[in-house]
Image 1 (cartoon, rainbow, N blue to C red):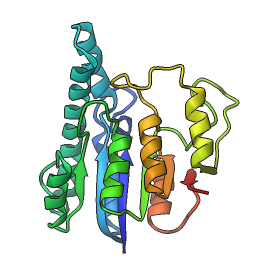
Image 2 (cartoon, rainbow, N blue to C red):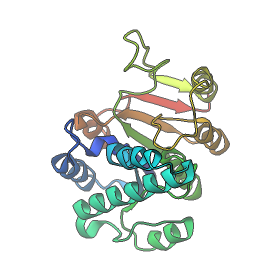
Image 3 (cartoon, rainbow, N blue to C red):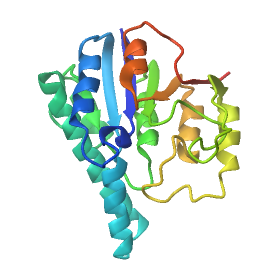
Image 4 (cartoon, rainbow, N blue to C red):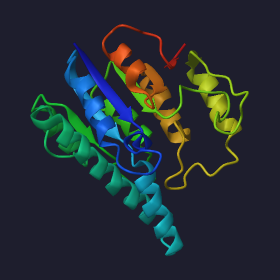
Length: 235
């Protein structure tokens, strides 16, 4: 039995037409429900396209970045509520909004689903902070790409996918993109400098894989395949 943290990119919950992909939400929840090999499971849900729409609207209305972050956090919590609905009575009914509320939720022994916590913090950073807090055995990040690349695979066709990567190599990749605004609300990156520091501090084992097609995730979750995506470790 393991203590697991699963980070789900908010973009995975929407179709290409920006509609809520309820079929995928059901599929994802069924995969997790049908093989409960965990002692503790905390799922962190991102805001995705809907959050970015609200953030862009807030910016257009001259809202500051802290306010934009709050919009993103609220949408991530609404997305979390959708997942809780899909898990039915297997999930803790409330979305924890702090580590204290997470501790209370843990007493239920149920699947816990939560979103963002505070402005200036990505949901990836939340996932790593939660993993450190519950002493997780593993963190899994489901995103819309196959893993960690040396550069943005959506912009560069020659981007190289890593099957394994160290913290130091990951840091080099992040620093190469440091010319971009790392702190802007709604900016999507698998990792930023804050999440990297949390990862290095906690020395967590982490796996990044695609959730665009859930077949690979199902194989991993069912124990039929170990090496899918990019494994990140302190080695």
